[in-house]
Amino acid sequence: MGLLLALILLWAVGGVGGPPGDALPGRVLRWYDGDTAQIRFTGEVPPGLGTHEVVRLLGVNTPEVGEPLSEEATRLFRSLTMGRAVYVELNPFEVRDRHSRLLAYLWVEAEEGWVLVNEEILRAGLARLLVYYPEQEKYYCRFLRALALAQQDKLGLWGNFPRPLSLAEVEADPVRYVGEAVTVVFEVAWVGQDRWGQSLWAAGSRYGFRAILDPRLCPAAWAEADVPGADLVGQRMAVTGELLWDTFGGGPRIVVRFPELVEFSPREEDEP
Image 1 (cartoon, one colour):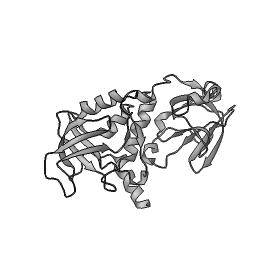
Image 2 (cartoon, helix red, strand yellow):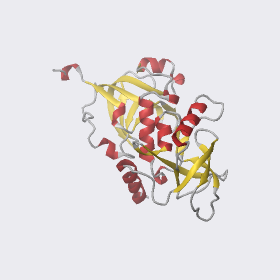
Image 3 (cartoon, rainbow, N blue to C red):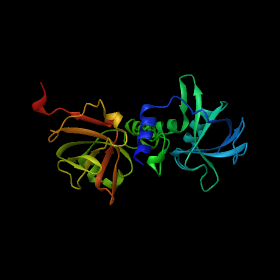
Image 4 (cartoon, rainbow, N blue to C red):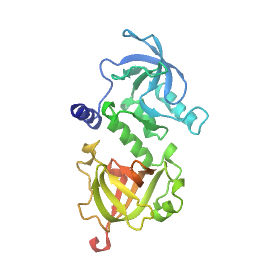
Protein backbone atom coordinates (compact mmCIF):
# COMPACT_ATOMS: atom_id res chain seq x y z
CA MET A 1 0.00 0.00 0.00
CA GLY A 2 2.87 2.37 0.73
CA LEU A 3 4.32 2.00 -2.76
CA LEU A 4 0.92 2.44 -4.31
CA LEU A 5 0.25 5.61 -2.35
CA ALA A 6 3.64 6.97 -3.39
CA LEU A 7 2.76 6.37 -7.03
CA ILE A 8 -0.57 8.12 -6.56
CA LEU A 9 1.18 11.16 -5.13
CA LEU A 10 3.65 11.17 -8.00
CA TRP A 11 0.88 11.07 -10.57
CA ALA A 12 -1.44 13.50 -8.82
CA VAL A 13 0.92 16.16 -7.51
CA GLY A 14 3.35 16.01 -10.39
CA GLY A 15 0.48 16.30 -12.82
CA VAL A 16 -0.39 14.32 -15.88
CA GLY A 17 -0.35 16.10 -19.23
CA GLY A 18 -3.03 14.05 -20.89
CA PRO A 19 -4.72 10.68 -21.14
CA PRO A 20 -2.65 7.51 -21.09
CA GLY A 21 -1.95 5.72 -24.33
CA ASP A 22 -4.59 3.07 -23.69
CA ALA A 23 -7.45 5.57 -23.26
CA LEU A 24 -10.33 4.78 -25.62
CA PRO A 25 -11.49 7.46 -28.09
CA GLY A 26 -15.20 8.14 -28.38
CA ARG A 27 -18.02 10.64 -28.55
CA VAL A 28 -20.64 11.57 -26.01
CA LEU A 29 -24.13 10.88 -27.34
CA ARG A 30 -26.24 11.79 -24.33
CA TRP A 31 -25.78 13.48 -20.97
CA TYR A 32 -27.97 12.00 -18.25
CA ASP A 33 -26.75 14.37 -15.54
CA GLY A 34 -23.55 16.05 -14.41
CA ASP A 35 -21.56 12.85 -13.94
CA THR A 36 -23.15 10.24 -16.22
CA ALA A 37 -23.27 10.03 -20.01
CA GLN A 38 -23.66 7.63 -22.89
CA ILE A 39 -20.52 7.13 -24.98
CA ARG A 40 -20.02 5.70 -28.45
CA PHE A 41 -16.49 4.42 -28.88
CA THR A 42 -14.97 5.30 -32.23
CA GLY A 43 -12.12 2.81 -32.22
CA GLU A 44 -11.57 -0.81 -31.40
CA VAL A 45 -12.86 -1.74 -27.96
CA PRO A 46 -11.33 -4.40 -25.70
CA PRO A 47 -13.22 -7.57 -24.73
CA GLY A 48 -16.05 -6.98 -22.29
CA LEU A 49 -16.95 -3.53 -23.64
CA GLY A 50 -19.62 -2.58 -26.15
CA THR A 51 -19.43 0.14 -28.78
CA HIS A 52 -22.07 2.05 -26.80
CA GLU A 53 -21.65 2.33 -23.04
CA VAL A 54 -22.94 4.41 -20.13
CA VAL A 55 -20.00 6.02 -18.32
CA ARG A 56 -19.97 7.26 -14.73
CA LEU A 57 -17.28 9.84 -13.93
CA LEU A 58 -14.91 8.74 -11.19
CA GLY A 59 -14.30 10.88 -8.12
CA VAL A 60 -17.27 13.22 -8.49
CA ASN A 61 -20.85 13.27 -7.30
CA THR A 62 -22.98 15.97 -8.89
CA PRO A 63 -26.50 16.90 -7.72
CA GLU A 64 -29.26 14.52 -8.79
CA VAL A 65 -31.74 15.61 -11.47
CA GLY A 66 -34.15 18.11 -9.95
CA GLU A 67 -31.80 19.16 -7.16
CA PRO A 68 -30.24 22.65 -7.03
CA LEU A 69 -27.33 23.08 -9.47
CA SER A 70 -28.11 19.81 -11.26
CA GLU A 71 -28.79 21.61 -14.54
CA GLU A 72 -25.64 23.69 -14.17
CA ALA A 73 -23.52 20.55 -13.65
CA THR A 74 -25.06 18.85 -16.69
CA ARG A 75 -24.59 22.00 -18.75
CA LEU A 76 -20.90 22.18 -17.86
CA PHE A 77 -20.40 18.48 -18.66
CA ARG A 78 -22.08 19.05 -22.02
CA SER A 79 -20.09 22.18 -22.83
CA LEU A 80 -16.79 20.44 -22.10
CA THR A 81 -17.50 17.42 -24.31
CA MET A 82 -20.07 18.27 -26.98
CA GLY A 83 -18.74 17.88 -30.49
CA ARG A 84 -15.32 16.83 -29.28
CA ALA A 85 -13.44 13.59 -29.27
CA VAL A 86 -13.30 12.31 -25.71
CA TYR A 87 -10.79 9.84 -24.36
CA VAL A 88 -12.05 7.36 -21.82
CA GLU A 89 -9.56 6.23 -19.19
CA LEU A 90 -11.02 3.25 -17.37
CA ASN A 91 -10.65 2.55 -13.68
CA PRO A 92 -7.99 -0.18 -13.37
CA PHE A 93 -9.41 -1.47 -10.07
CA GLU A 94 -13.12 -1.69 -10.88
CA VAL A 95 -14.32 -1.40 -14.48
CA ARG A 96 -18.05 -1.21 -13.73
CA ASP A 97 -20.28 -0.18 -10.85
CA ARG A 98 -23.31 -2.09 -9.58
CA HIS A 99 -25.43 -0.45 -12.29
CA SER A 100 -23.08 -1.85 -14.99
CA ARG A 101 -21.84 1.63 -15.88
CA LEU A 102 -18.21 2.03 -16.85
CA LEU A 103 -16.19 3.90 -14.20
CA ALA A 104 -13.85 6.30 -15.94
CA TYR A 105 -11.99 9.54 -16.30
CA LEU A 106 -12.86 11.59 -19.38
CA TRP A 107 -10.27 13.67 -21.21
CA VAL A 108 -10.81 16.27 -23.93
CA GLU A 109 -8.27 18.34 -25.79
CA ALA A 110 -8.90 22.11 -25.69
CA GLU A 111 -6.93 25.13 -26.87
CA GLU A 112 -5.17 25.37 -23.51
CA GLY A 113 -4.24 21.68 -23.54
CA TRP A 114 -5.72 18.51 -22.14
CA VAL A 115 -8.65 18.86 -19.76
CA LEU A 116 -9.69 16.22 -17.24
CA VAL A 117 -13.47 16.61 -17.20
CA ASN A 118 -13.89 15.09 -13.72
CA GLU A 119 -11.49 17.68 -12.30
CA GLU A 120 -13.14 20.61 -14.09
CA ILE A 121 -16.56 19.79 -12.64
CA LEU A 122 -15.08 19.73 -9.14
CA ARG A 123 -13.23 23.00 -9.76
CA ALA A 124 -16.48 24.68 -10.78
CA GLY A 125 -18.02 23.75 -7.44
CA LEU A 126 -20.66 21.60 -9.11
CA ALA A 127 -19.76 18.28 -7.47
CA ARG A 128 -18.71 16.79 -4.19
CA LEU A 129 -15.70 14.51 -4.03
CA LEU A 130 -16.66 10.84 -4.09
CA VAL A 131 -13.69 8.56 -3.40
CA TYR A 132 -14.03 5.39 -1.34
CA TYR A 133 -10.41 4.23 -1.58
CA PRO A 134 -7.99 7.18 -1.77
CA GLU A 135 -5.01 4.83 -2.10
CA GLN A 136 -6.51 3.57 -5.38
CA GLU A 137 -7.46 6.98 -6.76
CA LYS A 138 -4.93 7.95 -9.39
CA TYR A 139 -5.82 11.65 -9.44
CA TYR A 140 -6.68 12.07 -5.78
CA CYS A 141 -4.58 15.17 -5.11
CA ARG A 142 -5.74 16.81 -8.31
CA PHE A 143 -9.33 16.23 -7.28
CA LEU A 144 -8.71 17.40 -3.71
CA ARG A 145 -7.08 20.58 -4.95
CA ALA A 146 -9.90 21.31 -7.40
CA LEU A 147 -12.41 20.86 -4.60
CA ALA A 148 -10.40 23.03 -2.20
CA LEU A 149 -10.11 25.88 -4.71
CA ALA A 150 -13.83 25.75 -5.43
CA GLN A 151 -14.47 26.03 -1.70
CA GLN A 152 -11.99 28.88 -1.41
CA ASP A 153 -13.75 30.77 -4.22
CA LYS A 154 -17.19 29.82 -2.82
CA LEU A 155 -18.38 28.45 -6.14
CA GLY A 156 -21.52 26.47 -6.86
CA LEU A 157 -22.36 24.09 -4.02
CA TRP A 158 -19.97 25.98 -1.78
CA GLY A 159 -21.38 29.47 -2.28
CA ASN A 160 -23.90 29.80 0.54
CA PHE A 161 -21.57 31.73 2.87
CA PRO A 162 -19.21 33.85 0.77
CA ARG A 163 -17.98 36.30 3.42
CA PRO A 164 -15.55 35.47 6.26
CA LEU A 165 -17.23 34.55 9.55
CA SER A 166 -16.02 35.05 13.08
CA LEU A 167 -15.83 31.99 15.29
CA ALA A 168 -18.58 33.52 17.45
CA GLU A 169 -20.90 33.72 14.43
CA VAL A 170 -20.32 30.09 13.54
CA GLU A 171 -20.78 28.81 17.08
CA ALA A 172 -23.95 30.84 17.61
CA ASP A 173 -25.72 28.56 15.11
CA PRO A 174 -23.28 25.75 14.25
CA VAL A 175 -25.82 23.39 12.64
CA ARG A 176 -26.38 25.98 9.94
CA TYR A 177 -22.78 25.75 8.78
CA VAL A 178 -21.96 22.05 9.09
CA GLY A 179 -21.27 20.60 5.64
CA GLU A 180 -20.85 24.06 4.12
CA ALA A 181 -17.72 25.81 2.89
CA VAL A 182 -16.93 28.64 5.27
CA THR A 183 -14.05 30.96 6.05
CA VAL A 184 -13.64 31.13 9.82
CA VAL A 185 -11.52 33.81 11.52
CA PHE A 186 -10.12 32.99 14.96
CA GLU A 187 -7.11 33.22 17.26
CA VAL A 188 -4.95 30.19 18.01
CA ALA A 189 -5.04 29.21 21.69
CA TRP A 190 -2.82 26.16 21.52
CA VAL A 191 -1.27 23.76 19.06
CA GLY A 192 -1.40 19.99 19.17
CA GLN A 193 -0.32 17.07 17.02
CA ASP A 194 -2.52 14.02 16.47
CA ARG A 195 -3.14 11.35 13.85
CA TRP A 196 -4.93 13.84 11.60
CA GLY A 197 -2.13 16.41 11.53
CA GLN A 198 -1.27 19.66 13.31
CA SER A 199 -4.34 20.96 15.13
CA LEU A 200 -4.68 24.68 15.77
CA TRP A 201 -7.24 25.06 18.54
CA ALA A 202 -9.31 28.23 18.66
CA ALA A 203 -9.29 30.57 21.64
CA GLY A 204 -12.66 31.02 23.31
CA SER A 205 -14.36 28.20 21.43
CA ARG A 206 -17.49 26.80 23.08
CA TYR A 207 -17.22 23.49 21.27
CA GLY A 208 -13.49 22.98 20.73
CA PHE A 209 -13.19 24.25 17.16
CA ARG A 210 -9.85 23.62 15.46
CA ALA A 211 -8.18 23.84 12.08
CA ILE A 212 -6.19 20.77 11.13
CA LEU A 213 -3.22 21.28 8.80
CA ASP A 214 -2.86 17.92 7.09
CA PRO A 215 -0.05 17.69 4.49
CA ARG A 216 0.10 13.87 4.52
CA LEU A 217 -1.91 13.13 1.38
CA CYS A 218 -0.46 15.87 -0.82
CA PRO A 219 2.90 16.83 0.73
CA ALA A 220 4.31 18.48 -2.40
CA ALA A 221 1.72 21.24 -2.07
CA TRP A 222 3.28 22.29 1.24
CA ALA A 223 6.93 22.19 0.15
CA GLU A 224 7.24 25.96 -0.26
CA ALA A 225 4.29 27.04 1.89
CA ASP A 226 4.78 30.16 3.99
CA VAL A 227 3.28 28.78 7.20
CA PRO A 228 4.55 30.12 10.54
CA GLY A 229 6.66 27.81 12.64
CA ALA A 230 5.93 26.34 16.05
CA ASP A 231 5.13 29.67 17.69
CA LEU A 232 1.51 29.89 16.57
CA VAL A 233 -0.17 30.60 19.89
CA GLY A 234 -1.80 34.02 19.75
CA GLN A 235 -1.70 34.05 15.97
CA ARG A 236 -4.85 35.29 14.25
CA MET A 237 -5.83 33.26 11.22
CA ALA A 238 -8.54 32.65 8.66
CA VAL A 239 -9.14 29.11 7.45
CA THR A 240 -11.39 28.03 4.59
CA GLY A 241 -13.00 24.67 3.97
CA GLU A 242 -15.94 22.44 4.72
CA LEU A 243 -17.02 22.61 8.35
CA LEU A 244 -17.07 19.07 9.74
CA TRP A 245 -18.61 17.95 13.00
CA ASP A 246 -19.15 14.29 13.79
CA THR A 247 -18.28 11.75 16.46
CA PHE A 248 -15.44 10.28 14.38
CA GLY A 249 -13.27 13.38 14.48
CA GLY A 250 -14.46 15.05 17.66
CA GLY A 251 -15.62 18.67 17.74
CA PRO A 252 -16.10 21.13 14.89
CA ARG A 253 -13.14 21.35 12.56
CA ILE A 254 -11.88 22.27 9.12
CA VAL A 255 -9.25 20.01 7.58
CA VAL A 256 -6.78 21.94 5.43
CA ARG A 257 -4.82 19.97 2.83
CA PHE A 258 -3.54 22.91 0.78
CA PRO A 259 -1.78 25.97 2.22
CA GLU A 260 -3.75 28.45 0.06
CA LEU A 261 -6.71 27.89 2.36
CA VAL A 262 -4.93 29.34 5.41
CA GLU A 263 -4.12 32.98 6.01
CA PHE A 264 -2.23 34.28 9.03
CA SER A 265 -2.38 37.85 10.31
CA PRO A 266 0.70 39.20 12.11
CA ARG A 267 0.39 39.81 15.82
CA GLU A 268 0.85 43.36 17.01
CA GLU A 269 4.29 42.63 18.41
CA ASP A 270 5.36 41.16 15.07
CA GLU A 271 4.37 44.22 13.03
CA PRO A 272 7.13 46.68 12.07
